[in-house]
Amino acid sequence: MSNQLLKGKKGIIFGALDEKSIAWKTAQHCHAHGAQLVLTNAPVALRMGEINKLAAEINAPVIGADVVNMDDLKKLFEESMNHFGGKIDFILHSIGMSLNVRKGKHYTEMDYGFNQKTLDISAMSLHRVLRTAWDMDALNEWGSVVALTYIAAQRVFPDYNEMADAKALLESVTRSFGYHYGVHKKVRVNTISQSPTRTTAGSGVKGFDGFISYAEKMSPLGNASADDCANYCVSMFSDMTRMVTMQNLFHDGGFSYTGVTQAVIEQMEK
Ligand SMILES: NC(=O)c1ccc[n+]([C@@H]2O[C@H](COP(=O)([O-])OP(=O)(O)OC[C@H]3O[C@@H](n4cnc5c(N)ncnc54)[C@H](O)[C@@H]3O)[C@@H](O)[C@H]2O)c1
Image 1 (tube, protein in one colour):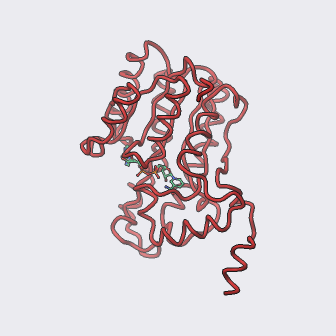
Image 2 (tube, helix red, strand yellow):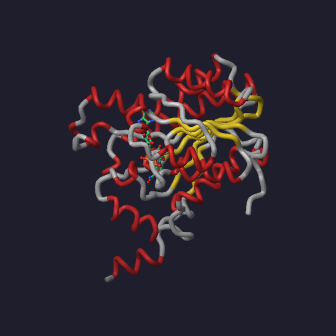
């Protein structure tokens, strides 16, 4: 049952690749709460065709955009505003890609060309999206933009590789652009720092199985699921969180503030 927290609101969801994607779940939950949506992803991801199932389920158009192509982003916002007949209330940035991880490069031997692309796709893309919206005056006052991040931005998780640096940059762009957009139009910008989650991007991290079970044992509430994350996104897009901006919000079952748990102590004593 839904409380229709997003009734009358219009949003763009970036990054629904398949039904495991956090963006996919978020689109479903936003729809259940009464929002009207546009779905977008990179043209190469759209070719998989999966997104059309979600589009039919929630009655949303799909508009392709490579997030590092400013012409694509301009077209996306133009077509979205035409579709909605007005401005946009919220955006989910659910995008991550590491070329060095994909090519099997260790952090200490990264290829800097790949690294630039990683930083552009995974972090500066948030700046590109916000700037396009700013230039086109596409967001309503009190609009809300959420990007997804991971605690490797603050603490070392060796196999997270260059994505740790990308997430640190993403969180910094969130604060810096969040300041300017807050002053300019009362638009708020936040990151949600999510537990490890079994998705295509998540499973790309080396040793992911060990990683996810360690986090489960280190979190008093256990790992937050993609559905839990979707619910948190709904609350961040709603008017219930109007004064929250420029924050990195941990959504991790308590992992970020836990030194050790009984479960981990018992494991070490075995
Ligand atoms: N899965 C996890 O463990 C976890 C934990 C914390 C944060 N996150 C973050 O959540 C977000 C969503 O990832 P996910 O886990 O749902 O995986 P996912 O693989 O389902 O989603 C990643 C998306 O990024 C899109 N993308 C990549 N390059 C793009 C480009 N150039 N233009 C447009 N879109 C592009 C992909 O097509 C895909 O839809 C990412 O930012 C990820 O880093 C994931």
